[in-house]
Length: 388
Image (cartoon, rainbow, N blue to C red; front, side, top):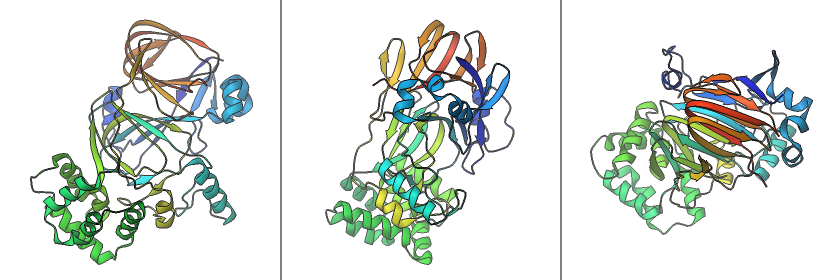
């Protein structure tokens, strides 16, 4: 086995788009929400692969012969397919969220297991024992909130709204806050009295409807107010960096970075995990203490990755050892060799990979130590394990 076509699970989360993935595939929208297409071996939604006419779950394929499928080096280092790839299509803002470090994930997963909390319990925070660094590369203009903005800029933005209910938040920001102060501010927003929180959110929601400075931030906040009226998470959102990626641009999110994807279609890759600590803009469980122990409130600027040109591909390099994303604008034929496992998804055109036609939105799994050929005209993304 070297190359196998994939059948992937589509997640229908409430924030998902009804048309972005259909448009990618060149199909008529079904009317259903299509939020994420999972491509990988995570046990929550493993892909199925066709191996010589037999369809088998990818996690089972890996378990049956890990050295052959993953390669000796990847098997020894990770013991699993280390990455999960997705198509992510957001029509509405996702929840504010952060992901744990691997040390925090192991402790949290074991703690919840010992407490007897079922893996599918709605109040469970840790679904596995892995961390979840991630990268998303835009296929359409893509808006996101990423990490805490520099404090001076947040003060300027909040002052421009002229909302009396923000006085307490501004007092904290004007005090030259430490990390503890910013974590305390986040905790305060998450635990505010329901009536007071709703009044604050409604006042801010009304203010961002007016034109003013920080146009992108106001536009994102208007989206939040429309989808989550009365949720004080809109204030937390206004403390984060708002960005809009052009197609081909990407961002990498390390452990502890509070973020939310807002709108658009992208290719996402991450360590194989489903651990999410939520911080607002969601009806789902929010574990305030755990989120505050995980989140990094340090203000920072967002680094946008354009992709390094290497051997005719754009390579999005990150510190994450589990994955590397590569974008190939195909016009003709190329040959590639693998040292570890790969997933290849086509995002434009119709490409032949080892003489198998692969249309936009479809993907193939390629085992370690394989050589494969692609031909045609289109765009494809490769999920690989970086060497070393």
